[in-house]
Image 1 (spheres, protein in one colour):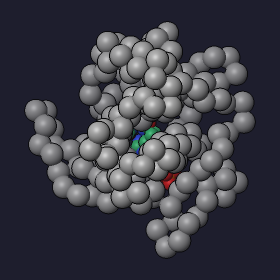
Image 2 (cartoon, rainbow, N blue to C red):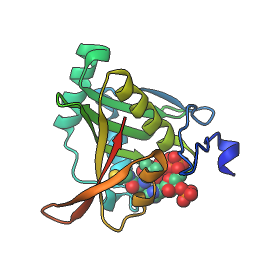
Image 3 (cartoon, rainbow, N blue to C red):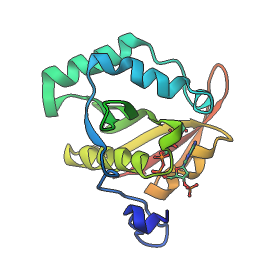
Length: 177
Ligand SMILES: CC(C)(COP(=O)(O)OP(=O)(O)OC[C@H]1O[C@@H](n2cnc3c(N)ncnc32)[C@H](O)[C@@H]1OP(=O)(O)O)[C@@H](O)C(=O)NCCC(=O)NCCS
């Protein structure tokens, strides 16, 4: 399927890939505590594993708790996409910091659902929500050499440096809002 059929919008010279609709039969909602197993399945699948660090249940529970209690004002954002059978096929976790920067901690799509626009939908949603609450930028880190390095520039993210973690080197990207 071509990108135009999927509804990806070409936007100027860098082909910024904003996407405002999910593929049919998929829905997006705030995460619930029970979603942890579905999220973990995405993270731990064979080909996704190397892209993620460890995501403990307590971190997901904390984000869900704050988001539920504080609604739109919450600094935590944890969203899931589910299919018609209730299977979690994608998730995104982010944090709106006090200093005006939103941090994208993880974004993941089930392997059999990748490249159908779901990640673009979640990222577009995050960028819009960050703008709406007056954030100045969105930042993220992704491991050097991974395919995802080609993904973020499509949304206007620019590489701003590298970060040497305990296990590997990560590229740092920022989108100015
Ligand atoms: C990266 C990811 C979130 C993108 O979401 P998606 O719904 O698959 O992607 P979209 O349909 O919105 O856009 C397609 C683009 O995603 C990227 N992409 C697709 N599969 C990917 C994968 N397994 N790993 C990294 N990037 C991928 C490609 O740039 C692709 O463009 P192309 O088809 O022209 O090559 C998703 O593929 C994923 O979860 N990948 C594995 C985990 C990962 O890399 N997470 C990010 C860590 S920072």
